[in-house]
Length: 290
Image 1 (cartoon, rainbow, N blue to C red):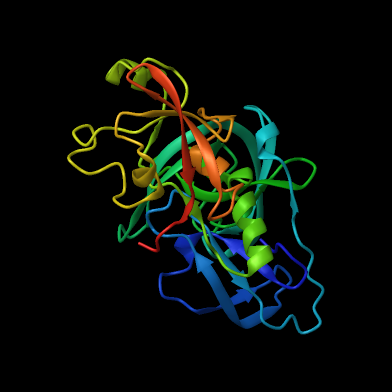
Image 2 (tube, helix red, strand yellow):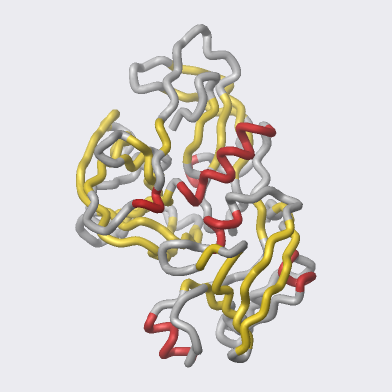
C-alpha cells in the first residue's frame, strides 16, 4: 500500500526476506520502480508482520496514497473488500466478504514451511485471500483501509486474516516522521484472555492480556530479560487490563495501544496480580531486531 505521495509503501514483513536492502515495485498500472529502499521490517518475533519501503525516485509519477480508516469502529458482519495479486499471478484481484471475527491469534507459516510467526489481534474475514494478497489492503465500502491482508487458514474455506490498521497507525506515523522503523515494546509474551483461558488457568478477570508462567509456556521465559517490563517489575502470572488507560480485550491488544506511542515514552500499565490491582509505569524501549 502506498502511504505517501513521495513513495512510502507498507507491506508484510514476510514478503521482504530478512537482509534485503533493495526491491523492485510494480504499480497496478504496470509502472516499475527499481532500487526501492527497505526502510525497515519488524523483528520476526514481533506479532506485527509489517515492513516499510521507500521509492527513491518517483520519476514524475503521481502516486495516490491509500485512505486509512478506523479499525476500532469495525463490527462483525461489516462488509469488506480485499485487494491484491492472488497467487502472485492474478494481478489487481478484488474479492468481497464480511468481517467474520476479531481478536484472532494464529501461528502463520510460509508455504514451504521454512518459517513461522505468531500473530495476534487479527481480523478474520471470509473475503477470499490467497498467497499474493499479503500486504494488500482490506477496505470498507468507503474505500478506507481498515486492515492489511496477512494470512490464510490452510485446509479451510473462506478463512483469512488481516492486521487491523489501528495496530499499525503508530508505526506509520513514526516512519513518516523519522524515516526509520522503531517499534515500541515492553518485552512480554502474553495471551489475550478468553473464556477458555479463564477456566484453564482459573483467572480472576475475564478481560485483559495474561502473561503465562514459565511452566505454562513450556519452560520458556515470558518476560524478556532486561526489557522495559523486566525493569519495571512486571511478573509472569500478571494480567494487564489497561495500557495508558485503554482497556485491553480481544479487540484491543497491548501491541495496538503501544504502537500509538513512541520509544522513550513512559506509560502506566494497570496490572492484576494475585487478585490485587496495581499501576506500574513502564518506559517503552525499541523492539530488538531478533
